[in-house]
Length: 230
Image 1 (cartoon, rainbow, N blue to C red):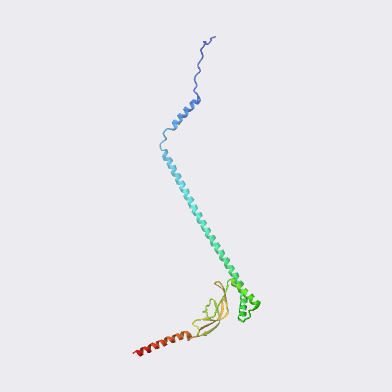
Image 2 (cartoon, helix red, strand yellow; image 1 turned 135 degrees about the vertical axis):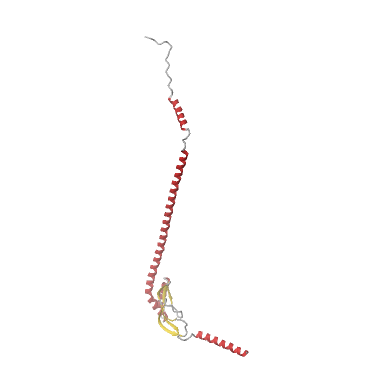
């Protein structure tokens, strides 16, 4: 049986530390990564950037086109709505005018009776107040009376019920108002019923004849004065 010599201890082999070896491996890997980049990498990046720019530009153009289309649609709808509002307002006014015209047409015989009573001096007392109140109401509703003696005959607003000839007129003239006419604005409710007179065939109005006589007298006086001077 052998015994180890006294004082001799076997040496243990040195094992490299893992924590110390890790930074060295990392530095070596970083050194390998930091090496020169392969040729052709930069042009590839520039090409991809250009493709992205083209794609973004195309998307922006599409968005602008869509925005313009929606804006035009909105403007068209707004114009159609405004036209619709104007049409509805115009129809409402027309319906109102027709309703008022129908009502006032039914009151025209009453207004004629009031006018005849006034002409005969029978519009007195309480009847006069009622008549004046009715005339005020219809005037507020827009009813206007027309037709006067001496005005020129207009077939669009006058209805001739009597016809005669007169040397005192130069054109067809209303010489008698049988029934006054009524209108609401430009709408004729009833034409004025009148008696008309036309110029006498072959005759001249007195005023025109007198003027021509004066011209003839003046011409005769000038001729006479010229004869005396000679």
